[in-house]
Structures are given as structure tokens and as C-alpha cells.
Length: 78
Image (cartoon, rainbow, N blue to C red; front, top):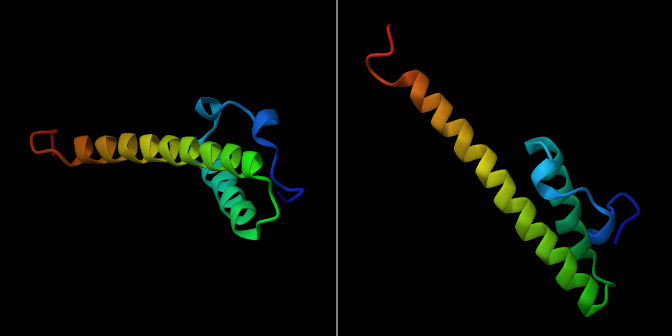
């Protein structure tokens, strides 16, 4: 993988990342996988990290959607 992306084992736990951190790391994971040159085991570990990062980003986005919809809900005092 590139020097910019940490190895999957050395990376911070996904659940501690902000949306932006997870999104940026996911972009690096995709780049690393697209570049190739990894062993099968490295590719699998990177893919698994990418799946976890994508799910974490989705959780952040879903929570943001819920907050926005709660603000737009009728009867909120407008």
C-alpha cells in the first residue's frame, strides 16, 4: 500500500474516527487496492478495513440525516 495509508493492523480503531477521518482513510484504502502489488492476505485485510470504514461512514451519514429530519419535522415550533 502507499506510504500515506497505515497498515490495517496499525490503524486507529474505526469506531474512534470522525466521519472525515474515516472517509479519507477509505479513499486511501481504495487507492491501495486499485494500485495492486499486495499479497492476497494484505488485500483481504485492506478490503476488510475498507468495509468497516464504509459502514462507519454510513452510520455517521444516517445519524446526520436523522438530525436534519428532526429539525424539519412539523410541529417543531416554527
